[in-house]
Length: 125
Image (cartoon, rainbow, N blue to C red):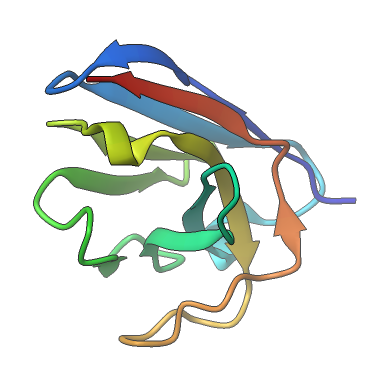
């Protein structure tokens, strides 16, 4: 059973930064999986934020975070990160990491079957 555990959320002022981490517990070969970050704000549907291919060579971003967020993947630590800079109040949400075996490609950001438990990010204006 694949397990993903997010951490790094918290309360930050607008303009600040946070780095989220998502560690994969034993159970699958992390380096074979693409990883994504999604978020869900109160009263809204879960939405795509960023994704990275299994080897880390390609990254994809939602327009709303492009230029502010950076996704990265360390296959030696079985961990994916989301560096979030210049945070805005509208970034407030629960952030989830996701594992997907099918390779990500431009425009194809459908989530895979495996989710973490989520971590809350709150940006005060």
